[in-house]
Amino acid sequence: MGSRANLGAAEKHPPIPESESSDDNESRDSGISGPRFAGRDDASKDSLARRESPTMPRPRAAIGRRQSTQSLARKKGRQSSEPASSNKEKSGSPLSDITGATSESHSPGGNFEMTPAALEPSMQLISDIPGVSDLKYDIRYFLAYHQQYLTCRHYFLRLHAESFIEHDLLAAAVEYEPLLYAVVGFSAYHYSIRHPNGKLYTFLRYYNRSVSGLLKSLSSGDQHSDAMLLTILQLAAFEEYLGDWVSLVDHHQAAHRMLTELYTPEKINQTPFRREIFMWYSRFDVMAGLLAGNEMILSRDWYMTSERFAIEDEANNPGDLKKKYFSWGIRNRRFAMDMASLIAKASHGYISMEEFTQQNQELAAGLEKLQEYLDSLKDPAHAVMSYPHRVPLGPNDIVDPYVPGGLYDDVLWEVNYCCVDMVGMLMMYKYQTGLFLQQLDPVELQAMSLEQCRFIETMERWPNRPRDSLLPLHSAFGLATLFLPGDEKHTMWCRRTLAKIEQLGYTYPPTFRKRMADLWKLPEVAHWWLPNDEGYPSLIREIREWTNERAAKPRDAFREDLRDLKTMFWRMNVDDSSSHTTSPTTTIATPTTSGPYPDYSPFHTTP
View 1: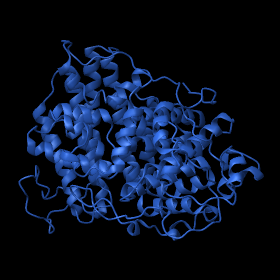
View 2: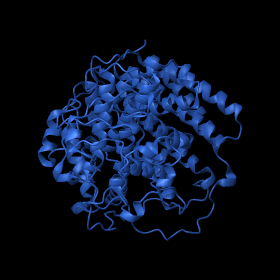
View 3: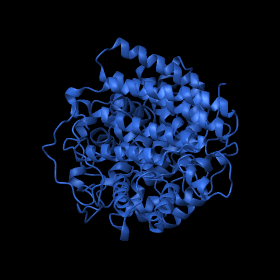
View 4: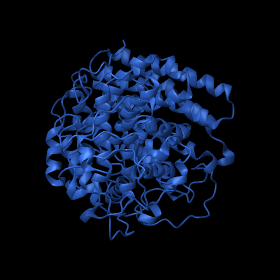
């Protein structure tokens, strides 16, 4: 997580309303107070959004990774500092200095960009959020854009998190400025991705202010709160979109320390709001464990307690689909945690083959129970049996997306995502345990991959699909690409789908691109998915170049394992090795606690 402060005059995009005096800006205190609900007196509880926000320091690293940001600074110049609160009003988009914008699509499979007019949000959507009227126009603009265009799917959460993302998160953001800047930056990122002339500066300036404000709060001893934890999680979500999973580890570890300081497994489940916080956190926990080949950082009782609460909540609210989706999500997380734990213990040599076999049988039984629960969510009455909108299949299609009963309609649309989750989990289980037991079945994995592609293609062709419905499928599809036939037809289909996902804003990490280039024996894929830079947006190019530099030197083995997607590409590691060991082996990779978050931060990890 490097400083993004070093962006500036050459990229004043969009222009920010200046305060009455730039001299006043330079002399203004740069400190940021703690969150409103951190137990302060009434005077200090006033929303930071109603006061002048701090002036950001001139270009210097807010967090640690100076080298990469300095190189960016040489290109961009300096950044001016802006308060978050202002009564100045502007009309139209805050990106008013973008001229010559067009609606030309860079997509090989659809128009993912929009005209500036089409991107314009309705400011009325945020009028009921207390304190929002005192915010500066650009802040309100991107909050409104978040409210109108971003959903739980953009956070890779299921429908149970709808109210949490669209209401609770925004309300909390207005109360704590670092969170406000993080949410606004995330919204500005998605806006910039859709804008034909989107720029890095548009969203990175908000991100940098969020980071600087958060570190200021932590170092000043402000009481830790939900708002601080939400800020860290929002920053982690940002890093994942940028493809910087090394920096994501820093946020994940900071979130872990704060979560265990603030809560116990029982306390985190006492309110729906905090349950959603845990669900959001646990996604990063599971992802880091599965892909780095390590156990989760959080202990198992957190997951078991959350699952118990979810089951009770579902039983007390029969017929509530969102409760069912939450229950599915936490069951899925718990199984993923158990799988990551078993694979980590086996690969590190902590357990014998006999112990592995026994625990693997228990894991297989858990997978069957997970499938049974998913089946209970399905309703044949909402299965799509015919496709009036179907078009003839062409020579480049690799699956039949019009299988009767192969999709659920709008009422149970979320079940389609659950089905993709299930196939992906089954594939990961078969892949990792098969490698360890030397019982890998490529035919079975290929069949699962094709089924996953059928799901994805069917969802993409559904006329009433939600906006950006492909985004939450990035992980499942990334895994499926490893086991598909290697002929030109399947490879090109994968390349086009991967390009679509990146055009929507999700940047696959550099290691994934390099590994796929090796797998397909197409070196150019490491540069861009499609030949001749087809559909390669300039903003995505900038993001990739920047992320490559930032992720080049991870601080420890754990970050290196995550950067290299260790367990995802175990087979390639084994094939490329001259070793004849019977299973994938590795040394211990324990994440260090040093990093961008200050050592003097009063975080304490509970046993």
